[in-house]
Image 1 (cartoon, rainbow, N blue to C red):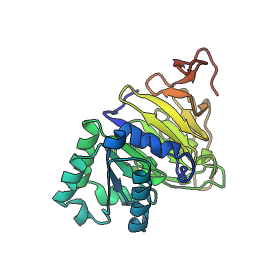
Image 2: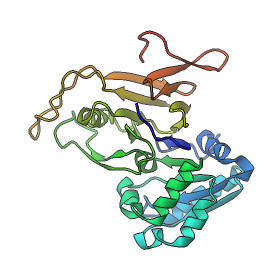
Image 3: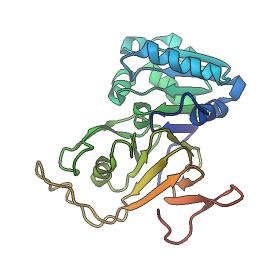
Length: 283
């Protein structure tokens, strides 16, 4: 299993708690340096950048972050502004809001802002994203798909993502919007790609050793298709249902982890330490 995890990723399934304990947002600030954190909020995905930027800026400041600023990168012209590079070069944490993930790649792709993002990641900055900002983290992302019917030909649309994470495809609002079928379709397109479905108010922390930790109130679903012996995805005609076998499924809540290289769960023992799962105890 290859990976290109140079810094730390925080991938959030959307609708994270913003009024209670704010566990996930607090963890982002902690990972980025706590009171010394220098945070940049990127609102490219949303059509209401001013509202989203102010909301997260106020939250992060209230939760104790040091410096917080929102960047309204709603055009390629703005994304090529050299001032952006200077702000992102100082960031210890970069946060992508929700909205439309295709807006992120179509506006940022090939710009100085994207180059600055990649540099920040390589030097160890924490890159976080919620909802659409989560889907865009990987090389390939789901941009559209039906959630209310069995997976069929053309039931999903895939596009290139930001490429911060290799050989993974991410879906968000996962259980809440019934997206298991469309993630299965994505895995069927290339069974070597690990499917990761993140529920609302839930996140995964991914570090450079390709180990992943689950936090938040719900679960993360992992789909490993390497053992698939048959799928009809290349033979489907419009309206025909997908067939796929031997997909290994893991469902993990807070306190559990996942080793993306070995593709095995990492189970928390009584002491709180994490250890790799044994035998065939797949959830």
